[in-house]
Image 1: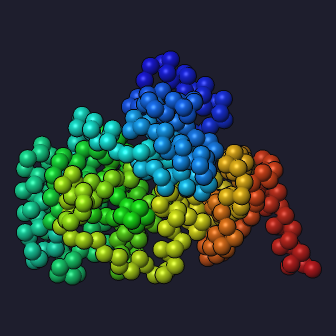
Image 2: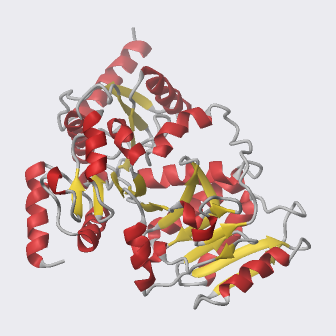
Image 3: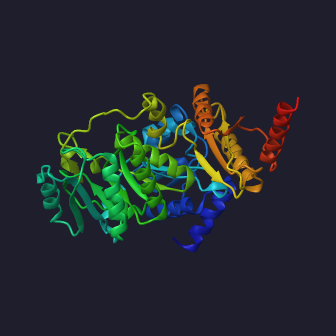
Length: 438
């Protein structure tokens, strides 16, 4: 990117009041290099460029906007945590998300387009090549590993495929896979691409390394995270997610790996600007798929819906949010910590976000995070949740109560002063004193 283009982008973001963290700005710069300068007039979408959306188009406007896009365009939503953008996202191919960056970049950046063709066609130019890793049950059928290894021979890719001890003879449990991935992370220095044994590589899987992300995975049915194809870049954020997944898997060894991967992603992306790529179907194709002939990675077994975890309501709660590449109401959108010695946490619930314009919601998020950064009020941890409906508020309250957090419920547009948390802490102390000494 030239200095002039960089300066023009700076001015555009500043004039629009868009705040991005370092990781988010790096991704936006990369997109501008690949697709071209930002497009100011949507009538220009017939050519390549980056479109930055602050407010969600609805109804016919969203349809017209979608039809105006070309494969050379990229759509960037700096406030992607807002469910008001979900309708537009459902029409687009979801490329990735970059998690919030604290008070400096207190929003989730979402990016997508009308298809992967542009990036898939240029991915072969990637100079960074991943190490393919895989494992299979020791004592089980080793033919699956042979099939994968044989398909790798035509590509200039290093690999590590090994048998591992398992509790079940014919199946690897989530904690066993996570432990294997942790060993591979410590053993090698290249980015890692886990591919399930039995899969066949039809093309060199270079898209994730070309995109330079922290993690890349596929969501089948657009919301259920799959660990059959999992990329980890050599970054601290990727390591954080891997360790979180391993810890969850060790704590809940019988729970399905997709559920635990989902929770590891949600926890990590709320605490660090995790740069996630949602891999296209060609990286998770199944035998019998209509697009199997164009697959990069072809898996040999159909994916089945297993028990998603201890909470039978999880599927309903998470589905809409995960399809839009964001956390749901029960999961904190963003977590911030302070240097306060107290372990007390506070949960701030921002309600009615679908009933207000995106600008008001974004301004309130920025005010809350800015106030906490300026004066935490003695709270060691802030968890911020965005809720579209009253049911979401109830789920967020229940989650906060289970964590024994103080709970504050606010609305978009509400005035948030820099001493907001200090005042709440003081009011809380007064109420406690009245309770103890009536």
